[in-house]
Length: 232
Image 1 (tube, one colour):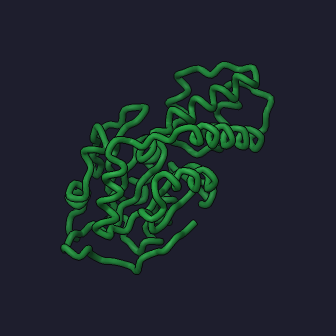
Image 2 (cartoon, rainbow, N blue to C red):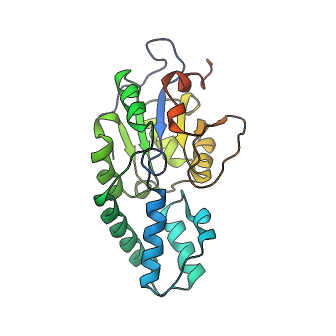
């Protein structure tokens, strides 16, 4: 779950109040939200069911237990949740093995955070086996900590993953900037007390207090993230 974790920090070297950056994975750093839906459609087609496209907004961004459970109930498919989880993870791994496109701006942002030694965590609802595959493309060196959805008692939309990540980096959640692409992830980060940048991928996310909405990760850099955190 954890790689090298830096010592607790109270303020970065330049005096910024930003203590850490916590990044979602699917749809935020890698362009894979569509992959998950495609795999779900393919798996249920083999089971004899057609998924309604409107369900995509229900399952996006959430833990697999929630999204898979919803699809089983909605379709009445004769399959258990553990069986479906295996099929979905296998299908997704096969898909990213063919191609794993990064979101525009992801490579540049990760390099910038690393160059300035900003404590950074990857916080995903995906399972550990998926995160480890994706990390080979993102570069594990960019992350002091990674948190998978199957490694916390409650994953997104609960605050636990972000509280765990902040604690692991020795940071105050209120001084952490989170970048998320779905309402589920945004809800988790806000419940943890973090400042949130929403980069919507599938469904719109409205602005709100403590939340900044941008059109692309290309609009996000270290100066932008530092500006989200006020001195306390």
